[in-house]
View 1 (cartoon, rainbow, N blue to C red):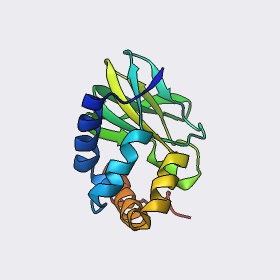
View 2: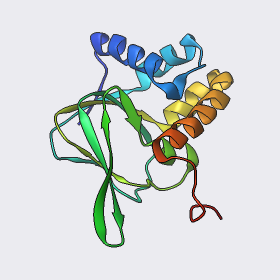
View 3: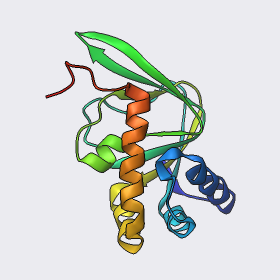
Length: 155
């Protein structure tokens, strides 16, 4: 269930946006403009938040809780990572128009702030200076999470 943010959640969400590496270099006014566009979602433990290969258009900001990232490799489900709050996921399908590369599931009760692509685009139109830093930061984060591409990943 999605809900608009309560005033106290706006303060928490702004702090989260300011600490996430994805938004490094973005002006405070742009982050402030995102707040009314975020949805708050509480997710119970063991719930699938995002399906592998789902065409999502949402960025998930993990404010509280832990999620696990899973991928089917050769018919076997493998856990790729555990993300602890504060963190984010869904950036690939959000910014690259490509399907999600993994399944994401809540490990415990989570609080997510969700930003839809259309809302991000709305802020980017108002503050075009955020587009380049977010793209650069996304590439940096991906490199940290997945490591440099190996010979089999290229091409």
